[in-house]
Amino acid sequence: MQALRPILLAGLGGFIGSAGRYLIGGWVHRLVPLTTFPIGTLFVNASGCFLIGLLGGLVEVRQMFGPDLRVFLLIGVLGGFTTFSSFAYETLALTRDAEFARALLNIAAQMILGLGAAWLGYAWVRS
Image (cartoon, rainbow, N blue to C red; front, side, top):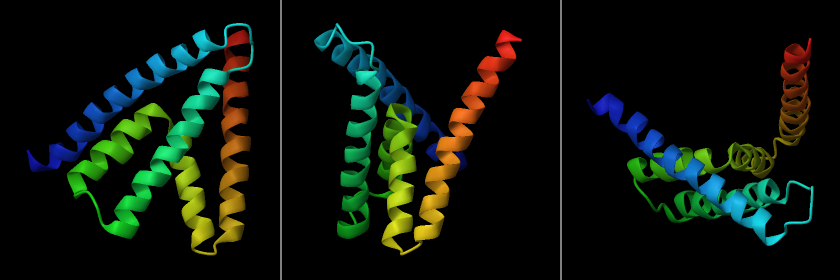
């Protein structure tokens, strides 16, 4: 049962984060109704990046939160809210550790593979 604990915490947090993404993204789109730009997604990604930086800093710098709360908040809630926040935080960690080439590789790989995979999936359905 102990092995299931982090999985359940991440899953519960993911549910909360995903529901939050849906609600907040829709709310932002209703605030700016005349745009075709995905401003709700941009807001969710930017706010998720801010939150993971804030919470990650509290964990690393101030040693706040136990392992269960870290899994619930960082992996579950923020992972469900936006995986872009994980990408941003991991890239920040690489730059903080002076791994600049790996940080740039991560950026390029995430963008190229992510956009390429989305295109490939869409193209596959259309063919």
